[in-house]
Length: 159
Image 1 (tube, rainbow, N blue to C red):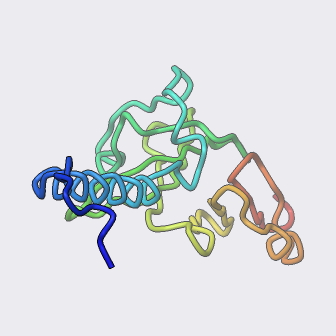
Image 2: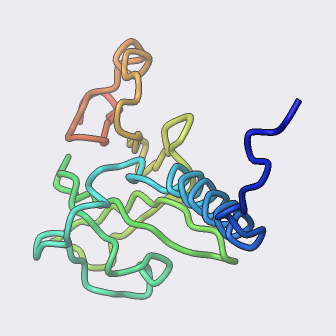
């Protein structure tokens, strides 16, 4: 049996095949890396920072990236923000609470929200920062109330 390519010269050089393979690998790797990056777990962090999102840097807020703060809502006279921080090369999400009438009244909690809420406690009240599309039925059943997107509160009775 005679090969169909018998008597013909190949128009593909071995180098061209290697270059094509390298391009295909690069495209595949780029696609995999793009799948790793994506929107934040909290959509507010993907929005541009507006004036209401900014907080005045103070000793208590140095741990968060000031360019990352986003206003979430208010509850009980306190304002709540989501922010990010990088510590030891690891980025985490923070819930920041401040009372505008008392510049020294700041508290924050930093960690993750991928699988469970991030909790901040202050004077017996508890606040939860949750990721977008977090199944809130567990919070509702436990008596938590939604304050704003991504922010829930469990306030002591009588407040």
